[in-house]
Image (cartoon, rainbow, N blue to C red; front, side, top):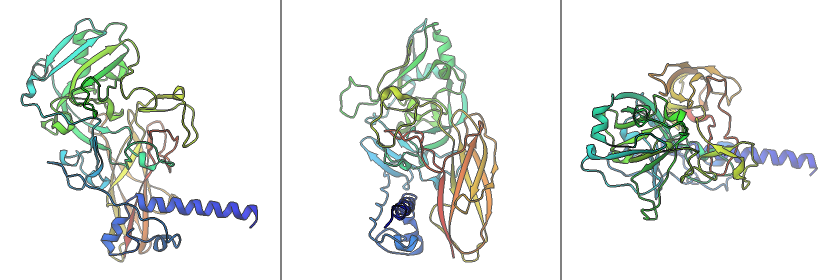
Length: 428
């Protein structure tokens, strides 16, 4: 075999491997249930899907969460700490129900408080007046607001990186959009009186470190003062009109919109204002940080080349139909629904494709209810025949940046992976 032939063969093998990875990772095992197709435990066998590699390993099926009040279809990603994501098809509500909302913990789940209004929060550090306030006092002294805001895990999309990055292998389900009720953090900070030296917040919580060591913060992140003063950064005590559930940080938590969910501290007990960038657990080395200069995928990485992940990247998901759906023979049109969001920015355009990105069709994009709400979208696509189809969706944010075909700018902990969402359907 010549050098040119070897190179071509290598390229073909690489494409086949990428193809198999997609067929497994997007949940096409669902086809095995829907269509009754068997073969190697993988739903559609590799040979059936692409005519190659019958010896490929069968993808492992998902494990489902069993937790009171939670939908039985949430996918369990880890139990120490407890982490579960929401399949894209369960994100079809304008407001994500609590039962469908993803779970991301870093430590042990604290016991539910018996007297929520007695819960105490401290504001200290670079302030003129240290504040110690109960949740009951917070409710009575400040004007409450309700906002529908996206909350997204910083590692959402991590599972698409190659080689694999460290951490829970999220697909697109580390996200939800709830109605949060609380008070702007800015109002409380104004009462405390920020000193000119105030630069950064440091958040602390009541959950216990996985080691059981009460002296170790489980995670302590913070944000620039400018973000803390955003009127949509909230201290909240209600979710979808109900008292904030313990599993979601009740009785009180932060919501820092558009930024990684880890900044939205659950079980909030204290906010310290610092005169420099916070350096608590989850703020240093590679934690919630992305490369300044692109690094070689799989390389060790230099912490000096990393910056803190702030605004999350644009993302669009198809919420209906579900991946693996089967339609009757002769179906010529599919109605699509989805959701999109873009961190601190907005989404200005959604496009969908049924021919692997060879051509694109504009979707109808709805306006958000308020800033930081996600934007729902709809589209209708024509199908020329029966058969197997993949539907792709791509968001473009208000600065003109599009979602990429694959997770790019690899980093050791897999942040910023916002590859296009793809589902597969079968007609006939």
